[in-house]
Amino acid sequence: MKAVVIDIDGTLTDESRRLDLAAAAVIRELDIPVILASGNVLCFVKCATKLIGTSDIMIAENGGVISSGFDGPVYVKGDRARCVSVLEMLRAHFELEELDAADRLSEVALRRNFDIESARNLLADKEISDVELVDTGFAVHIKSVDVNKGTALLEVAALIGLDAGDVMAIGDSANDVEMLRTAGMGVAVGNANPALKSIADMVTSGRYGAGVLEALKYLKK
Image (cartoon, rainbow, N blue to C red; front, side):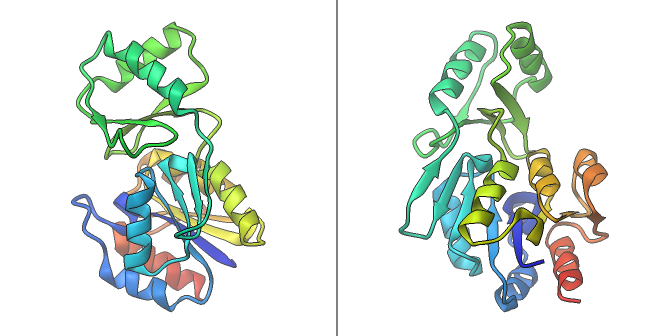
């Protein structure tokens, strides 16, 4: 593998969003690009990237935003206006609390305090197929179906002159499925949801950051 892409929440951090410092220390020692990929907003990913010391190409908003350098161009792939229109439709049926509205460029994020399956069924009943609801365990995202961390990985790999098959991907949640499928090697940490574990090439015994450490030690063999 010639690069690594790693999810943040639930992978490099635990359920309380505490960063695994041992994993961060090993990441700094790697001599290949390490890219952070998150469902969170770009400013959060930039902060994490600087603190951990990873590469300055970043994936945010579940692949809807790609940043090439801390001060470089930002590419927006998702259709936020369409996601907002779906949000307004859902608000007629559910009490919804939007998160990070001022900072989201490609999608909508919601607090996980409503019946997600009922909302998905409503989208299906209304034959809405261009937008989906993705539950990461930290938030529910209204996002474009054709944009995900896997599509972003293809673009990021090209930016650094690699093929996605040259990249190891590490994650924990439903929004990491496409990323693991696209990568040359997909790793699910021990706390990952069953859907991700079922498609991973490797499932670590360690949970959260301990699982990342396990994957990186395998990579360095």
